[in-house]
Amino acid sequence: VENEEFKKWVVDNPYENPFSKIQFTVDAAEKEKRNSRLNWMQKGIPEQDWAWLPLADSRRWQAFQGIVNSLRAADNEICVMVGPINPHMLSANSRAIYRQRQTAIKAWLDSQAVECVIVPDLPSEVYADASHPLKAGYEIIADELLKTKLLAKFRK
Image (tube, rainbow, N blue to C red; front, side):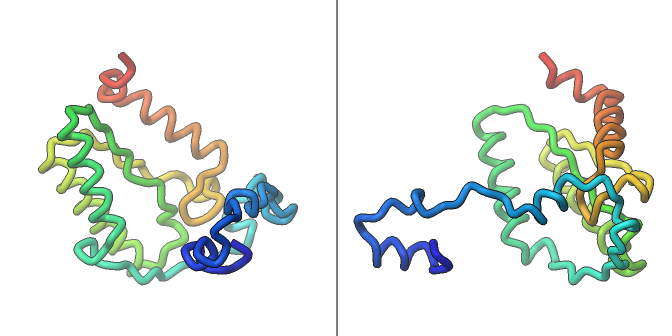
């Protein structure tokens, strides 16, 4: 709060309500960015060469696996959608690692008997950035999900 680390702020301000310090407004420039209809190329976003963390070293991946295991232990039906990531803006090396991650994630989900849908690569022009489609991209994803038999299983 007020650019302090949260735990420190709470200790330093024991009688203050930290939620009263949260501003629920979005900067106008950020609003425009979020509502933009421009694709990543029109925005001038350059090709990306991401430094991928190995899945075995990823806390997010470990947390995800824990959540899946908890949901399964509670007898929940699970369907995981992997993606979307914009492969068109990734360097060849980064795209290759992304494909390896998709394969590894799907293999782990299959080994756990968890239903999985890999989002197909969308046309380049329907991505807003590295991982957010524009409206047309979300429509393609929705259509793909509707085509899968597994979605019908979850529409009971």
